[in-house]
Length: 248
Length: 325
Figure (tube, rainbow over the protein chains, first blue to last red):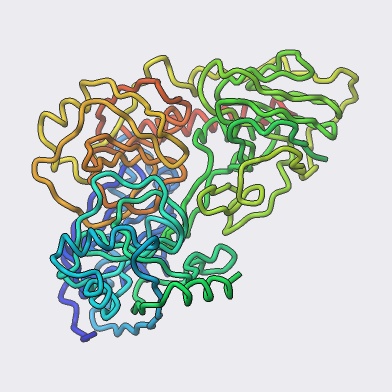
């Protein structure tokens, strides 16, 4: 990954309901935007404003959750017109000016085994057909990429990965499945990811990993963090069974 | 010092105000679906308002009370009885060891909260006692209660004092429930969602002009609601980003989903609306088949409604701490 200087921060603020504000740094999946989000998140967590609860990074924005009552009670003059949202926005604007633009970022690499296709990848053939490829070509393309973890979300420990080849991009299913098994590897538009727990979801499923991604008794409770690099490698059905057994 | 489960009911879980601070790792918040009822149930027995209680859903469980204790039941009316006598809700009740506490038919609402003075002895996972069912974490072994489970009490009740012989004695005073429960067709107030402008004008109008029905595919994660299909001006995939309690997402089939306590931390469907925090508890008391009417408010109004409601809870807290002395 090349290191570039961050230019002066351009951003937009918007409310997510009455208890969160979304700080948007751009509108596409881009390394520089990811870097700004990560740096800003660390800055906020290091010196939180009064009423700060937590923040959640995504591809192009950082959502900052706060408690409007704590923010309100902190104000010296509690006039009826005071808006906790406006108070939080002005705190955030001040913080944004402190972003250090030449900070270096390091990335950890994590390799994840995947058993592709058949019962473990019910949508592999659909993804191949949609892109005019064979299923083997889809597997080769998917397992030769390097993917940056832009965010963890949707389910505990679920990584949203950037770097999927356009050649295998496939839109989400029109109606989500009601259950998807833990370990399922999927594609949604230009995104790819792994389901750490059984949950409903709308992604196209191409394979399955025996690796555990959600670790509820550890802190942090997720194998992957925003900023990691993930590589996938194909394994056979037998290898999958063996690895699954070892993890018991 | 415990409750023994004789019948588990449809879905009975331990919930508090949820698991905060781990959403960036994708850890779901969970917590009570009706937080006002949970907080009041705790205040009625002298607990901290965020203590964990049992969330009882729709069809009631039966418990044997294994030790003298003080309990309170709030939220939806699931016809609670002790030894077949009606148990009054929204007030502290002294219960005798050996009493059989039974929830019956659902008369109103959807979820009842059962608190015990001193709280339940449940260990925290990542800072909360809430059960997250899909992740099998927190609460009672990460799952709903089953037959023969024994839910222990902390046993540090400060308000269990006097001797009595009846199977229960209920306080004469109570908290008025009306303010905290939905009316027949509740009006749910919302703010424009992050992608509100992506929807067609006719869909925006239909969203406020139509009645939406809570579908049977509704649970702690979210309520699917059906009505006129909501459409985008242009079909597009949006990038996944954080969602919050009350985000209303619209998947391509046009049927909105209101995200609730066990919601995912992020979502990739456009959000038409955002239920205001004050009205989330009302949704938690709706059952499948019931109707909702949506009404739009401004952010300032939502903030003021929230602050006013919290001031009411604060007054109640003061009044209850005096009453319990």
